[in-house]
Image (tube, rainbow, N blue to C red; front, side):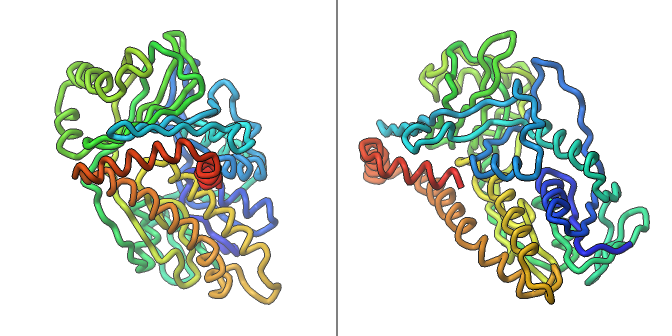
Length: 388
């Protein structure tokens, strides 16, 4: 089997890439198992949610999937409230940058559902088999299917089997922290505001979610130091729920009232990953290409930015160049160098900065937040950076 382009990975980034190439008229084949999507009741929510930027929302609209999402499962973020580890406080509002919202909170399963639906409607060529091996110009699945292509795209996650098989090395540094993810019912309505706290234990974010029969709902993403996270994960579910509620009450100072755990707590180790982005007839996208600290919630937005840049670069190539031409791939790498580096510097820099507990540094960083609070043009720059 041959195609101009083979996308390896059937998650959000891989599906988006295959659909975007198909819409550009590029012969493309998607390789990867079909996502298992369990139907959720009205008050059930997938544990993993993403904060999609306006740029990501526009991209998903351009490939025809945004309007397929269930509006009842989307939450617009109208404002952000960021607390330092002292008296630092920064408010960001969509109106400060003449935007209708700062981001959209969407479940992973809802994005996958509409992408799969669009793939079926478009008749996307999809080999629902697992990656087995790779040699230059050829990919073999676990069922023996061989695919040849001019360009292979590794969109198969942080551990990326295709990237490894192609011999592309990734630099990885562990943060010594674990992200705990769970949904909570809150006593005080969130009013479309995402709230974030920096502390010596880690970074806590409470993201607005659709209301349930039990009341307002938020999704917690708490990047805790490994020792604290391990201590919580070692507890029984009942003890863990109680310990989390106690810690949250202290960390949030009751900002959203009492928080009651809904469902299971999930854990993800945090790493900073960097890759060369391209190889011989190979392009990397999403977590296969890079991972950043989740404190800004920009991981998927970076991945969708990769897809858009790669698709536009390949589609606009000269007629005598193939999709995997080295010049085309270098153009893609140049396009993504600045935004990926900028996000890595900001997120890694903030994570490192708030790890330092020396009194002068604590005072300076909180003073900096309070200074930014008084400067509208700084707020506009922060919002613009997060909207790309």
